[in-house]
Length: 426
Image (tube, rainbow, N blue to C red; front, top):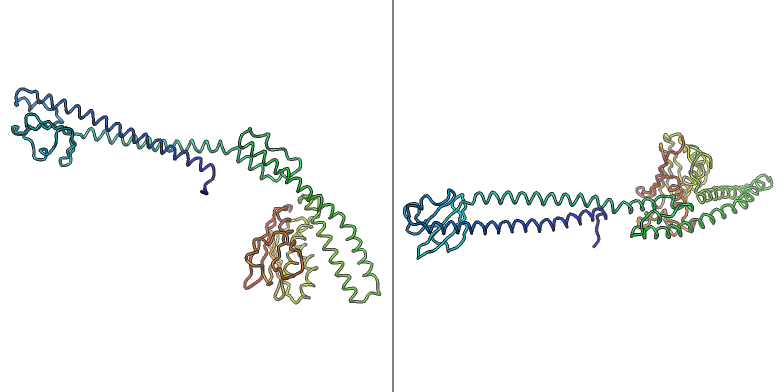
């Protein structure tokens, strides 16, 4: 059975149910015991009073002998002592009799063929029962309230180390190599065992992350040299007047690809080193500056493909962002839009603290929409270009910088990517 409540709520519910069961059993036991005992006592008292009345020598004395809350009748009795018709069917013993709005306890005795009946008003008895029921009900409710309170206190005590452990595990510093182990902070109980398991898992995760960072850093660093050679060669070729226009276009294309590769390598290198935007480790640029730079790069290939490039500058804040990361995010989204759009337009809209890239391309299948930011996932498998890493890189950069990226569809077709940027340095 799968529970939707949290563990703390289940502890409180368990306490409340246990208290309800125990308190309910005690309440019913108390009520039944008191009712039985009081009934026995009343029966014995009425029986004694009836025996005393039967020992009276003369009938004339009976008028004054019953108690004020008692009525005495017998077969053939004079006047008010005559046995009423509603009592003649009663068998010998103890009974409860209801007469109009009142109720009575009755004791019946048969002596020498004559039936004697003694009634006693039970209003006081019923009042005591009502008070008893009220006391028991109040006690039951108070016990439930106390159980819920104690369950809440105990749940907080029990769950405190679990909540603390969860916060420590979620903290991003736990992935750093110098992060202290968790187990020494906890007792040798179930939570301590859980902390030991987390230490082991986090240790393996740190090792895997360290290997990935080293590999990415080394590869990115080693790629710088051949990219620099390619860029230098392209510059020299462009300075050669013997190259015709067709060759010059090809060289310029190679140069643009080298520049894109250089920016991509720099992005991977910074991500591998986990360099956050602190204002000193990388250049800081505004959203407008990055948009102008990328529009200068992508306008020509977009228009050459027959698409319309729409730019809506809006009113972005003069906030500064990591130049490498912002270039990579916006550039990858523009590249993705160009790759998957054959007709229509590509629109870049700047907002106060973010931007939107829209296209009228083939769109993304609904079954792949949630997985588009995972590595090696592409919107249209029939298109052979690309490895499906662009959106994965966008997602990784946004997570690193505290930004957010969301994907929605355009009508009748196309995609809309909305990037929300956090304000770092004004």
